[in-house]
Length: 482
Image (cartoon, rainbow, N blue to C red; front, side, top):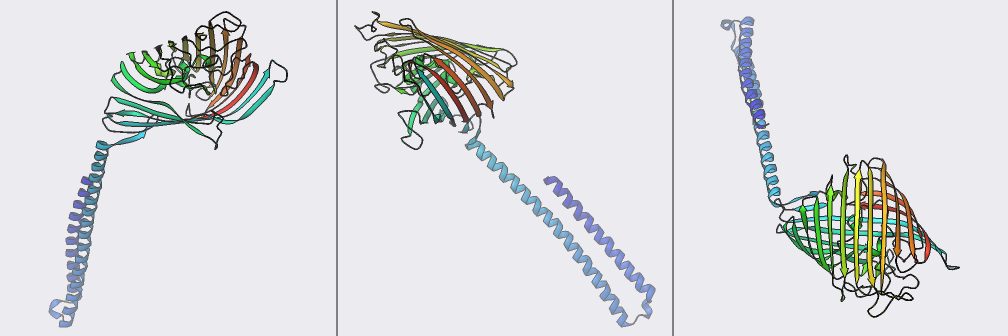
């Protein structure tokens, strides 16, 4: 642009000057010719000569004015050229300054980071607002009732990133309305969730310490990316959720095989909305470990349960985990329950649990499943009421599938699960059907589901179950995520 402006200015100046000279000569010649033709010089009177001179002076003045205008145009072009150059230089200088100091934008979250990525902050958040209806049909007379209403299932804010390149951190919390009877605008509670700091020695060796998810059930890793408004009823009694811990994790084969080993305080005190004694502390050291192996895709492809990406080739993942807690932290049936089945005493001994899960995605079809097993001891020196046994072995599983009728937009899903105990005749069944509309992927979606639970084995306000009853549960949920 600068060269173009210069060439125009130079060419305009040269041509204008030549034109002025030619015009001047032409006008002078014409004037003299006219004067000569009109009146011979020898016969001109002094007055006529004076008039001819004044005419020529006027023409010369006009030529000078035109030349001055041309000169001003050339000067203006030079000024424009200088301004353009200054703007370009300032823009380049400021761009370089920004590049050397700070970068900001959106990439799966709003971020601020240094150009070498040694320092970063990413802000994420999501909320799930739902309407729920639960109708319970108790086995005893006059025990039928129903509940309904609006509430936030989750309303979370997450800050994460790194400092000095390899030090990593996460701070997250939930503005809950479903715990301790809290309601919107009255007794709202803010709960600290995953809040930890760590150091990344390499992709294969990462050490963390703080409050974090316990590496056991896979569903906790996609709590905002499920095919239903909530988890399977059969899953909750086996889910330790999160705890204060020291954690070692990494990728043995990048994106294909990873591991996580954790020492913690045992199952969280805020398990599925039910509060247990002792907070995060207690005489119950625990250890958990989990591995994941994926083929046809990455492990990160299974951070949500539906196949929104519409995998063109079959992708699958198999995971397995085990955990041991030296003392069951709950003076109740299992973690996740508030009411024990009839004939079961308080179980507060050691807790041992296992799980294996499988997942697959292919062209809009998604399959997710898990099998759980755990053994819970009675209090030392005691036995289960009326059985003579000192422990309870519990198993559960669920199978679910979803398919996009309209790719990336409309999905239907179904789920079936069971929960069983070896010391009682208790046997819980569940069946769920749902439909989902994805407005903008997992970032904005609407979900609706209906669940039937026969012989519910525990009470859970989030899932809508009531111990000792048959439950019909309806949920409509809107999710917004960034």
